[in-house]
Image (tube, rainbow, N blue to C red):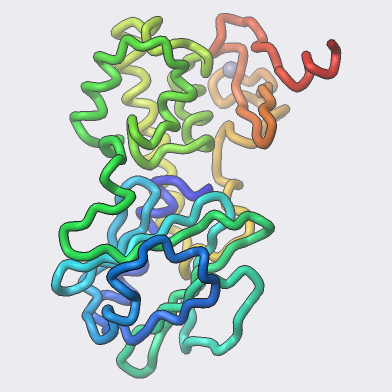
Length: 280
Ligand SMILES: [Zn+2]
């Protein structure tokens, strides 16, 4: 799933490509993807795009007058920038938003693979919609304070990925950040000492900063089928740990896995639930 670096760099590219243009129309191609009943997309016709922005993993098209279009790509959502706009209706297509003046451009939102979870929202001025429940951004002082003060029994792996705690971090950068901080994914927030908390903040910000630098080299929208090739640890089970060189290990869950190294866990392998279930 695209996380903060992918969406931030995408917002920057879309600002360059669509900023100052006029939203002409939104052609609905997959009905379940529109998550708001009002305002209707038709009411946006003729408004100027001020810029694209990001909050958490949401991309925002900010329109003159204060209305916004929010887009969440979820697991399999992808975006194509079409110059000129196409008339086709590709498999998994959800909406095509066309921008003038001539030569027109379009943004096509679609789903890659079998997932049907990407969505978009038309937000009236002031309406926060799905953004209302998001936690702070990782580079905010509020996030650093939360890391310094949270004493819950929640596991740091779960806590970091919770969008109500901190917005924009998912499985990929969580694996990378915890490895860089040399923290066990299963450590509880309550168990972290002051030094570990500082390392955690620095590592989260560090992997996101590095990720953003890489993502800024991307061109076009965000159309590649696979987006996860750019991590240091996530998805790299069996390859050498960037910290110590030992092979990275996995813990499997029903539909995904996390990657870690025993240099994060005091030398102890974590129980792989799938493996232990098979052995039982
Ligand atoms: Zn290691």
